[in-house]
Image 1 (cartoon, rainbow, N blue to C red):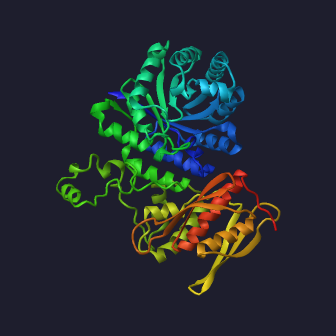
Image 2: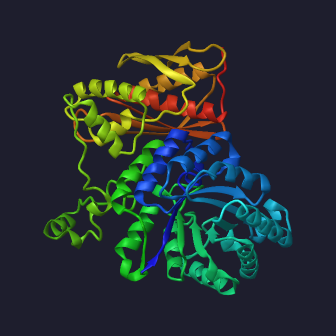
Image 3: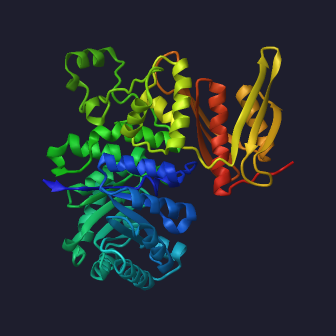
Length: 510
């Protein structure tokens, strides 16, 4: 059976989703879980874009050993040099270089002739190949490019040393049958195509990213590029979990196998959702909370008699049979540490001691501590330029809700200066958010607010996720607490910290 590689771009294209801003520790935690999932290639980032992205790619290249680590670079010398610096210590490094090839991109974005684009592509691949043995070349907006020009540029970059050729549907324009025929035609006209792996990278603007990716499988491609939970620019990328389960469930149709350990899908999906703040819709295929839920009486009757009547895959296949981690107030350090290791959560002794203390406090409030609780306790914070010190709410049915918020500024004009403001609002949470805005000196616009229990039971912690617009930029935040108001405040403060870290806003002392 033919082997198909899975290339994951959650940490590069996925992080380009509006509101997502992962720090280095968060990226490493996701990368380790992707490695455990069995991903062949992890696109760790775009090193030229920022020092933080460079450092994260370098850290992943150092720590992750069982997946190829790819770094993205335009077909430019400075990009390729920077990518190589970031991944040079990886056991299996790949430079992924690209340039646009469609008439609309060449004319309006690049303002270059096809001959110049061809020259830059070849030069970029040659430079990348002088540094690594594994070079992927992508023709951006390939699905709107001319077949003959694509075949020409692919033939030339293969000769220059490319080992993987990627044919992206960058704007999600293609239709499945059309895309399959397009790839087949390009491959037929490309000299040396038998020497390289052929890849596809499909976007979901028309909801066809997974369909287009799968349509390409039966014309002989060797790699699918996708992202966990379908994250990515605009409407996102092909969802890794959907691609993996389609290939697994319909193996007899596609005739390929992958290295994906499908039992790690649920854990990976939940981790990515938590750290990015991008909630999974309930009816999302494979990983949505309703994916294996049955409400119709007819469906319930059928499933109770024989699961396969309404389930084409089992919950166990995606890891829902993993025993819930159950810890309590009598649990010791070793049990907690082992549970963290099972979740790929690493931390030094000082940080573990703080977590263990928080664990004991929470265990006094709850009967059991679950896997979800552990994730919450170990939550990796965005760089904390401001920290929540205290909060106080005055509210009632005859009072105007008032919030007093105390933040500590940990970097800037006065280290550890306490900043306190009070504000009115239509409700307790709104008042708290207005007080935070007054402290920072900005007017954040709350675009999304979601509250849910992170596990079952009356003593469950509340999880709040928010998306806040600061001018033209959006930042996501997440907060967890047994008190929903505190969880709400923590989520907003995390969004503020992400915006501060990115330089989208600055603290304006009043």
